[in-house]
Image (cartoon, rainbow, N blue to C red; front, side):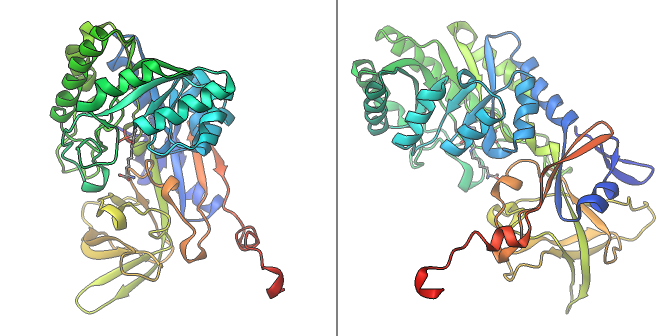
Length: 422
Ligand code: LLP
């Protein structure tokens, strides 16, 4: 459920009519709902309420500091995958002991920065990384709390580009090598083993792959404990999917996910960490765009928007489906006709939908892409020198710009001419 609903025929973000924001900030823009973010965070809190736990928001899905502050104030931890994300979390006021650092390619600088500013744990992804982390920590006279990310060789049955838990994927250490690498970890200076980590993919629509992976992690935990390691924490990653197309099957609910975790891991006496991104941020955001032209082609019509693939890359990159709805609600009587919905960028990949049934729209009309909060703004680029679009956060009847549209001068002046060209 989200808080982008029609009221008197006009799409609102909570209590704010979207045309009001569009008139103030211009289109395209991203708009987020505080109530939806809060609701989704609480769904996970409630789902795990029977267990000692921490919900660490995967900030790669939506990293604006206003979002991080909103969730941080509710008690969320953060999952970061770069020094930049780590700094964002700190800047948003998240204490280091609520930040977990994931990712296959952490640099020495990133490790040192996190060790000096506070870290809950590093999720280490290889023996090689473990040795480097040990050197960095020992060099600083610090101790790095770690989990090893284990690759359980489970197929998450999701899009090829976002499955991460099969043995052919670059992530984690093979579960068959886990004991040996834990032994190495225990022998290295500056390293403290605190748990096990797993993340098998994103946009999962079935609990079975999660259960298969968590069962393997439960077995491994017992073995590692018997080997003498302290496993007090299990980080189960993120990945729970959301419904993008309203007609599609409904992915499992956080409550059922939580019950499964309780059933599979409840007797281990461990603290549970999860790293959801999409389920918290996805339906908490929309992308609002204006119609530029309705172009009649041969045998098909094109609805040309001012938003493009550089603003929302998911359809071009993964063939992802997003609901696209008119901001002024179409009455049931109105005839819908198929159109290709495209942006102005100069490649055919800049297509959001083909043959999508839409009510009649005219230049200047507003449309909203639903479920665009996750992996929307964070994956945007300035391709075609199109400025990054503004982000707006709504709370009840208030809204605020939480990232402004840069001026063309700001973008162009980032380039510098070498001496020989001046
Ligand atoms: N933890 C780790 C280690 C991850 O790699 C990810 C996502 C998450 C947590 C959060 O997963 P979520 O709960 O959001 O599914 N750009 C793609 C999705 C990439 C996901 C990458 N990792 C998309 O737009 O679908």
